[in-house]
Amino acid sequence: MSVQFVARIAGQGLVYDADSVRPTISLLFRQDIMPGLRLDISDPRALITLPAQNGFIIGTLFHRYGPPERVEQLDPAEIEAICRSKGEHLLRRYWGRYVAVIRSENALSVIRDPSGAMPCYHTSDGCELVLASAPSLFCAAGLPSLSIDPTGVARALLIAGMPETTTALIGVGQLLPGTSLNIEGSRTTTAIRWDPWKFVSSLDDRSPDELAADLRRTVQSCVSGWGRLHNKGLLAVSGGLDSSIVAACLRNVGNDLSLLTLTTDDPLGDERAFARTMASYLGSPLFEERYSLAHIDLNKSSVSHLPTPGGRVDALSFDAIAVKVATDAGANAIFTGNGGDNVFYMSRSARSLADRFSVNGPSTGLLGTLRDICSLTGATALQAISQGVAAWRNAANGYIWREEASFIARDALEILSKAPIDHPWLAIPQGTRLPGKAAHVAMILRMHYSLDAYGERGGVPVLHPLASQPILELWTCNGFVPVTYLIMPPWLRTRAG
Image (tube, rainbow, N blue to C red):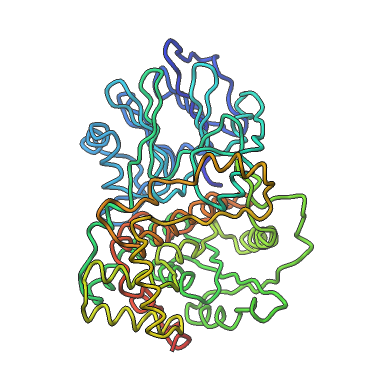
């Protein structure tokens, strides 16, 4: 099961004693980190305590450099660097699936890792700030019942997956990936601690061969870390690029891997031929299952554990089948290729042509990008150039997030219009004209809701290795070279050719 936690951070004048807070339901292990901070956690193995009352890290941590093995404890020099930098050292030198609470001087910083794989929600209860891995745990911890915010529900539907600090539950906020809550006395503020644009600013000009080697190495390292930690995996596959990359990397690390593919009656939803080719190449067992209406309940949400509405009806069938197959196969984790389209930026637009022109000007590289766009989309050179010029001219406006207002009442839309859609990552830095990268960053934002939705199913952790921080950082500063040709597994080359 994925780790669950409730952390209470006392306000001024409040110090916890042994009987001040009853244990949280289902969280069996209590850790008294410091006089004003108490933690209940489901698995103490997922906790790294920083000595001298300097805080803790919940989740899974890997070194950025060196073997991709889970960090179980930190040496004193690393702890001192993490605390002195208020967590910046943690973001630079480590990656994983974690939430960290770090004390520095008279303040606390709560940091959520940039991938967003570990959820973190927060609310206030009197003189304390309460953090939890799921909103339901607030009630389990004895806090007052949560109430639905109708305006928050409408906004969540309108913004269609845009991650925001607010939720559809009154008084419950979300700590966004790569951000921190900073608590100093009675004052709580938020800060962006990881920004993809910092990596875009150092666009990589290495050759495709050099990029390919670096990308293979980085992806293999990230998948290996998760594959060793959960050594008997079930991978949901289609035979496409993303799941194939994960499959090849898991095989390379010796994971005892089983594969699952789901089909529909429509031939467009039947990818068994590709999945069988993959299974044959890997020598892994393949479970072929079919989506079933028997699993669908229109009164049930596939994301009922989240504080905002969403999810897909068909996901209920996928979830039921995946959990059953994982149990039958003895898998200790479900792996997916989710996030691949977002991180590698699967796009059919001409924005990358504008980016190439902004970086290289008229060049042979510009002609190569034009050729790639036409080959991918079937557009003529004139059509691609026209769209690229339009994207370049509008680049200063940043990426415009598309709203989904079709089924929202007019009076609700009037209220919602007073708070426009916004996220710090959507604004292009001043002087930058990279509309393709702006759309790439927006796709990474879209990924976060999916990661929140699928962190666990039926007590089995669900892992999305392609969303790991090192891959995000490497490929955010690249993008002119199609990822397909850099790391395409052997069984896909025939399909693509």
